[in-house]
Image (cartoon, rainbow, N blue to C red; front, side, top):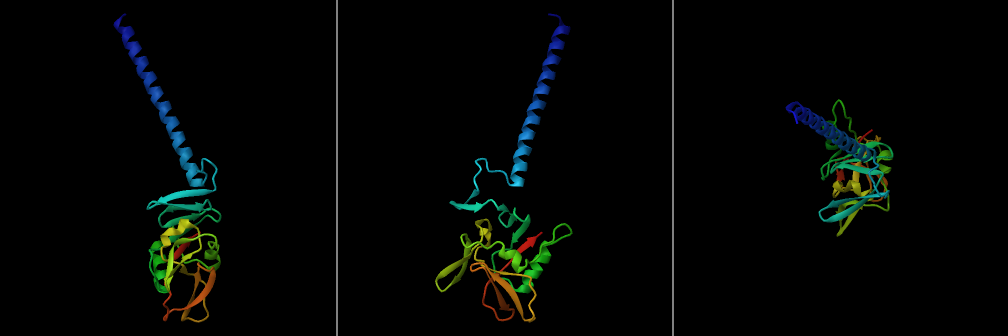
Length: 198
């Protein structure tokens, strides 16, 4: 076999290898982007189940497909396409809650304290999230989807409904699903913060 024929065969083999690698790369990219788009759109249940499982400290948490946990403190409501930001697990004054929402907002994202009607859409008496507030030897968790487990001891949350008395504000008790008024300067109730982005 002539040297020229050997060079032609080598070039042909190299071209075939390059084409093979390109095809594999394209197929892998298509598979990746298909799975990624299914995850983002909420269609990542291969078996068609209506619950997702998340392992957390050796416990399996089941939550409905309506709520997609983006990360530990961010939840997407796929029904309304609103996002919920869970503030760190502690009690806030109303002023601290308002300041926290300002800190989270920027030109691209506007986070706000929700209205009572918005936050009450989360209430489900058949669900529970977090451990809830502690009172007289018992815990009273928020009755919302477990995707919100990062609320921890939260069950009362500030809302932006305007109160006629400047010394009072409203909160929602998500353990009972009720709106309550709170004296801003004399409260022992540990009110937490959930912010909404529409």
